[in-house]
Every structure is written in C-alpha cells, then in structure tokens.
Length: 131
Image 1 (spheres, rainbow, N blue to C red):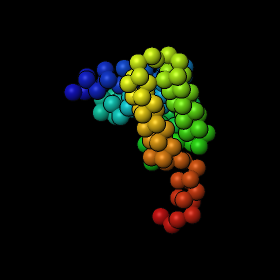
Image 2: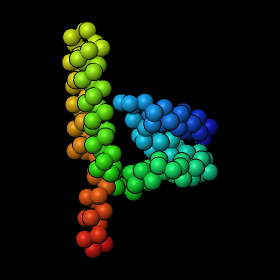
Image 3: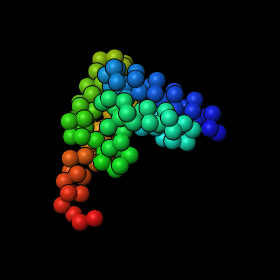
Image 4: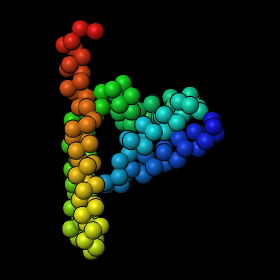
C-alpha cells in the first residue's frame, strides 16, 4: 500500500504543477491530495510539499481547517465561471453537454464559495473565541 500511496502522491504533484499553470484547472487540491498520500508513504516528500513556496502555506492552512484565502476563492470562482462560459457558450455544440458543463460549473462555484471556509474569517474567529 505504501508504494501505491507514493505513486498516487507523485501523480497528484504532477497534476498540481499542471494545475498551477493551466487556467480552469485547480492546482492546490492536487497538492492537498499529494500531501495526504505522502503522509501515508513518505514523510520526507510530505515535508517537501509543505515547504514549497506559495503552495505549502495553502496546503498547511487547508489541513489546519483554515480553508482558502478570500483572494484565492475569488480567483477560483472567476476561473470556473470563465471556463464554463467559454466551454458552454462557444466550444461545445451538443445541448446536453452544455447543460452538464453549466451545472457542474455551478456546483463548483457553490462548493468553493460556500463550502470551503475563508481563512481570514476563520483566523478572526479563532482570535476572538477562547480556546
């Protein structure tokens, strides 16, 4: 099982790098998945992902229950909307596929906007409430 987690983690890291440079494809979610796999297979690679500049802090925040920064949520929602509008509006000709893309995009927007916590809000709540 350890080898399977290691291979999956490496695959997720590759997808994460692709996601960082490809509009509409998430990157951080793949790094979160990679870190989870590495936590079960390679503590050294887990530390490596957590120490990556730009990516590591977001993965650590997500693992700590802080969610995403507001700016990252705005960018994610904007990318989802732009990709879905382009795909459903211009690139896809089959009606049911257009509808499917629009529905999946709406689910993605809902998930990012309302299900994933906003880190600034969670930090403010933790600062105010006694632990």
